[in-house]
Image 1 (cartoon, helix red, strand yellow):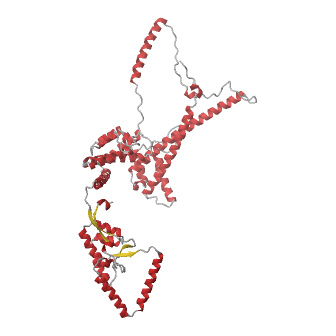
Image 2: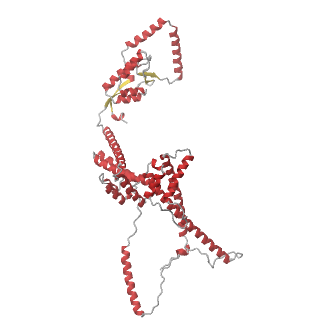
Image 3: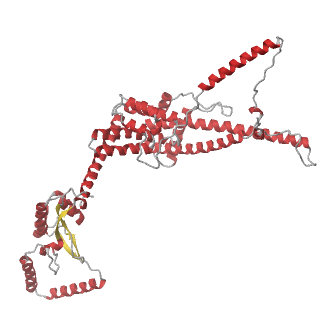
Length: 534
């Protein structure tokens, strides 16, 4: 049988007699120096490992306390030193503190460290001219401090792993253990002793054989189920969890503890999407049940994510599952947590129901099952003009303005609000909700109050200058007329306006071009609902 000698490569030789040195260097002194250097490096490495191990352990205990405080205490409780101290002593061992060769025996306990942290944050808030009695501010500062601890812990673990690898790459006297070391005096008859040894050896082999058959391999490390190639795919364990009826919280708790791997973002989202399938098939009861179970997974996963653990920590997740069910859903003394949870479930259920209705409606429209809806919309068909909303002067004492305000007040409340925005799109949105008959009645009121006007659009700046010159010339000519001539001109203009029978003449806003009502007000017949509903 071939013998593997590679393990001896890890030995650090500090007293090798065959080592070659420079002729001017004393060989024995060099070996002594080398031996001393190896021992110093080994001592420093072991010392660093113990220090980092104590540091990581301490941070873990502090984070455990801080996370529990942030999770269960309100903002106003975080600013009370007495409340924080009582809570820590009631939920954690007040005498628990770091121990080890490199730890100061007079080091404060973990609870005292957390209390000191709150006092330090309050002093920092004062230095920054912020209110130390603001619970929300203190919570934010604690969360930031918590993130810093995570960063330092991560660096410590990385350095610790490097030291472990470096240590394992060398064999020292600490790693040498005695294997078989036995001696005896053979005073008995050799034949009898040999036969008895053979019997014992056979019995030992049988026992070892039977024992080896019962040894089980360690279970593989649990990981969250994530189907990255198909985000809609559900694991069988997740589907089974969705089948648990609403209210069986103890069964849900036990199932999640036994199947922690389903508590992934992908699986809880995939379970949520399953509810759409049931709702579209008309089974709202099962849809609600699926949403309820998905929300359970979502709450627990959200709490777990606060820990910022990138893998599935069985012990930590088990603790979170038990805490959530016992303190939120099974807490008979304070049902507020359960009430908020069920309200969240109901909100998502209503969202799914509404989305399913829209999906069904869109599907019917695509299949041509919905008839066109007759509506009236306002728009200008001439590209050179656009419609604009003319609000009446509500504060004027002029009889004409008072008349327009009275007509305006006859409009429905939603139409009044739309007109006040001076936005034609808002007005059309209200028209879209009306029947044609009601919309036509509204249009008559628009005409009487001159609420809609036509504005000409001038693309060429020269046109604008020309129009301005004409206006100024006409204005001068009008001012040159006598009072009687001015009144006659106004009278003729009013007579021409009153003789017009087309509604568009009342909407022309003194535009010389007569515009037909179809240019400003159109009836859109048989418009599918999809053109109106977003």
